[in-house]
Image (cartoon, one colour):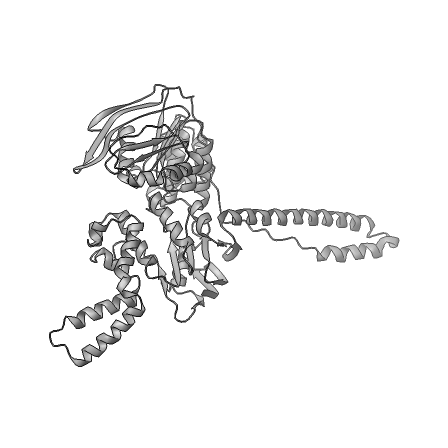
Length: 544
């Protein structure tokens, strides 16, 4: 068990948390939610001991081991992958090092033998003989193949490093597990594996995530950070949402009834306070009026943008024809003879672990990269808007937000342009912010404004939810569902894929394409084992 007792954290004069009292118990998975800046990651740092609160304390049951997901992706660059995972249990790894040092001695003494015996006993108690196989199983489950287990972390990609650090946090059955955005940089297969791991995990888990489907799958309770307080709700994310909205509605209805009663009492007092025969009744009503208190409904720190993609023109039957696209990068076949056509009703999700292949396909289709072989042709009624995964270059200038967005708008009227920014929560003076000072989430909202103002009838998204908070992800999801044009997108957000896509494409190792007209959940249920066993020698068509 881990608890926070009267925890307050002040940043300057502002109190991020004030007098927080909360207890996290064994057997529960707590989803910590709140708007960007509410302090979710900060609170995890307080719980893990990385950050000291201004006042109050964190108490952990004596003898329990706490593990957390490391955020420094370069900390272990000089370490072997398998060793890095085992370091998740610091005492076990320390024993392994001490044993190796003793056994490596040329002048092995009796004292060394006694010490080695003690270490071996402790090692066995901690299931040390299974450490390497347990670490390997975690890595394999997250998609880190066996040939990478003995490489140095510096030789791995960024996404692979994240998986190794996640395996480190999970290693050794910790009593308390703290995970800050564990699904970031994970492909959907790895997320599914993590979901099953946490569902079967019997100790205490506290997780921060913007993935609604993930929170619904793994959480037994929700810890909601708002108004500088943390409120616990039993159930998963959807249950929290319904409960919190119901609570607000009930408070508003109760206030409405109280306001009606106040008005009634005030009218009576006003009419009869000067009437001698009614003065006692008026006095009685004054006392009743003084006792009525309205419930305080604080404005939430959560803010939902309004995302609405409206095409300027209808799309025809011919949208996109792709024939025989192939692309090799650094000797690796990324795309291998890929062919498909898009129709005017298609909303296509690109899924699977091959992140590079998806990005390369997007770049070819938008004209930023040339294929080695093959052709593609957009229909004459189409217009495209593209959200790139790597958008850093887009903001490498000295424009204000309004100046930047105006260049992409046919209508140059400042009020018109600011209207699109306002929908994305850039109000008032925010319009004169310089691009260079924007956060990652603000840049994403700018790009979504650009896509809205374009009026395109084909939208291409390459991982658009990175950097977004839960409220913005929800708004984007709704905007994609309502969009009347054609979508081609990749996303690690299971709920977006499931609720938006009517067609699933997966570029598998070797660059071949699986193409199915189905929902994502149906695709996983019907083809999961087949996909794992497939040799991918033949590109499949879209028949069921």
